[in-house]
Length: 523
Image (cartoon, rainbow, N blue to C red; front, top):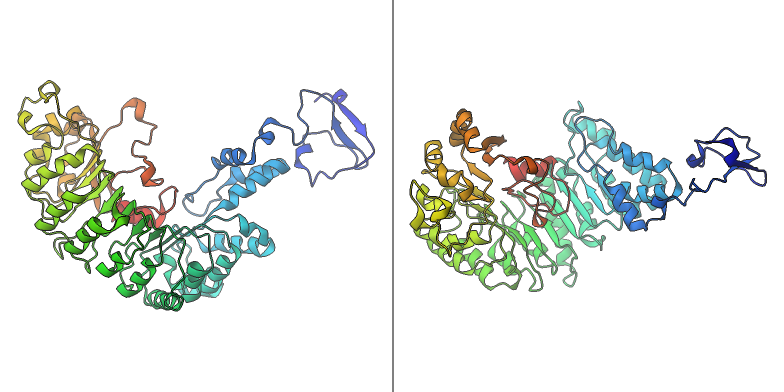
């Protein structure tokens, strides 16, 4: 900067420690201040980005925030923290972004966060999400006893934390901290956070947690008129919670939209106790062994809350118990709403006749799971081409004029006996070609995915690749060059997930990771 553009003003002074905006100026005495006289240079607080409305500025800075913690224990959110040192306007917006969504991967971060809240309680008013879905003590060389002695994250500090963030709207917990979720923590969640809209307690199932949950429900029973504002509830794999306690909680949620009860003891009474004003869009009743197919179908048919479903998971493990009998599936296919985009009937006894009745659903569904179905490959191909057109020479020209193409992007054919590596390749003119579009993911069992993995040359010829994660395997259509950088699986109803076939849905709009990612796509 040319020194002619700086005039000396001795009427006031400034401290460079308080104003990082002036660090680029030449060194001057504390008795004089630099005033910029060049019209091409913006005065502090007048830069174009600083004149943006606060909401837009926070949205822009939000792209610098990192939700998923990096591997190991390296620093994160370095970029957004740097914005705190630019100007007062940008610093205020950056502070809101930094504290809006708090993600805690381990106890050291939690301790630092708590220390800041204790020193500056006003920061707690900025917190809208407390995310402990990534929390773990693995890799820190500490036992559970060590963590208790360190007193970073305990039932007491967790309760204190919830007291210091009274405006929080989303709380994401999980099994790695369930021993610290005591009755005081649950009471705070259910009775003292009026703005709470989303709560996830994924896989929390220890005896201490179950006792605490029962105690919290007893507290709700004592106040019959108390209703909760929670809209999105996740109890995925909370398998030890008593059904009667779940019933109490559900009866207090008149605004419910997302309900994940996968592998819980929920009963038919609990489903019917959901207030009539609820409007469910996401419902997961997979592996709920206390429910019968009749219970589920009656709820879906008669309860007002079940008329606008977008995601429905009714999966079961037929080796243990089958939720839907053939007659239940028949009734179900008569009442399912056209709003559905994802449907899992894994484990249901699906025959060729019932599969034919599923064809109309493939005109609006994007995900369909029919693992263990007792059907042939020819039956499956009817989802993608008319039955009259099925032959070895089928082409797009042979399609019926009134044929409505499938909208399926994902299909789960795990443990369908007719689906093997040879049968997939034998039907490649349909299943692996553009005729099956927009299909891009086929989920199959371990043996089939292993056989497909060995046939890399053939897979490459058809434009498909094998992908595996945890216990699951997928045959995936390779993206076109123009789609390489696109999240093809992103949908609003997935709330941040970009993959197909999630078995647990998020209750908050965020990137998927941590233990939640494990239950969504690995298990």
